[in-house]
Image 1 (cartoon, helix red, strand yellow):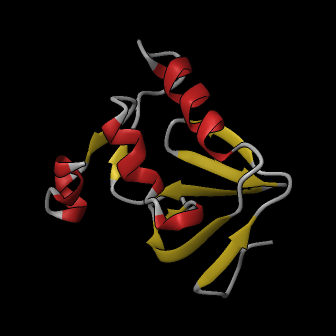
Image 2 (cartoon, rainbow, N blue to C red):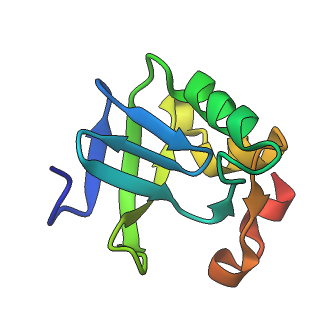
Image 3 (spheres, rainbow, N blue to C red):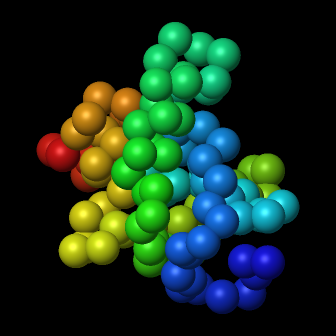
Amino acid sequence: MITAIASIILSVGIHVHDGDTIGRGPDRVRIWGIDAPELQEPGGKASRDHLRSLIVDQTLACTMIERDRYGRRVMRCTLPGGVDLACAMVAAGHAQDWPRYIGGAYSRC
């Protein structure tokens, strides 16, 4: 379970729910700063699949930012080498920067 800690390392058993939500077991983590299409929306499955391709066989370092209105942990995650996962999703066109929460930081990815 991913509770009561500010930073975690995720490696084995990460499940990709959609283009901005990952998890392990029953826990879900919302990736901070981006919005990706829902699975039933245009581009939703492609977004999920791209996120999956980025994290397969990778170890993620995630830092908790807050909890969302659904109680999910909202975390900033990086890939090996310090690549910001959210920025990689925006740069590939599979997610949008969410300026309401991060002030447009990912618009420059």
